[in-house]
Amino acid sequence: MKFKACFLAVMALVTSNAIATETETDLGLSGVHLERDNRTDVRKIFDKQADQTPRGGELSTALYAKTQKRLAESFDQPMPDRIGESSSGE
Image (cartoon, rainbow, N blue to C red; front, side, top):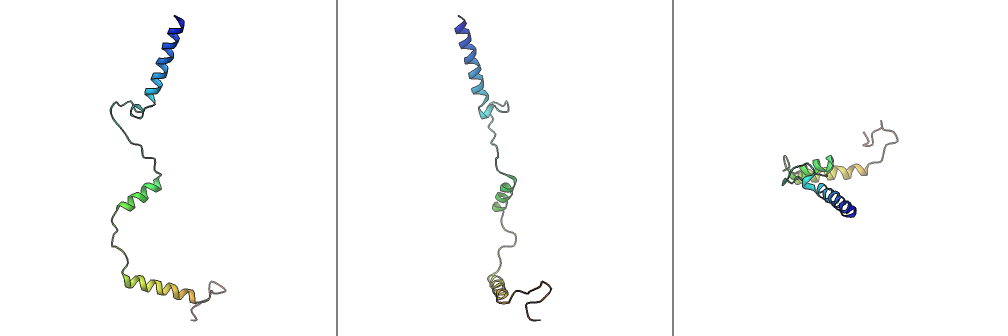
């Protein structure tokens, strides 16, 4: 008789633990499914930016080509010995 009572008590505890660990009963709401967002704040911001349409679009081809040309020209000039010196020869 004691064995049967202990067995039933253990089964009741195991069953209640199994039910309590289900995601739908975490908040005590029956039939309501809440999804948790495990993303970091930075990831949320990046995802939000990726979903938005760009404001003003991309650079024009002419502006991009001019920028790349100026960047390439800057590598043709020698590095100044001191920051106060100009490397453009002026």
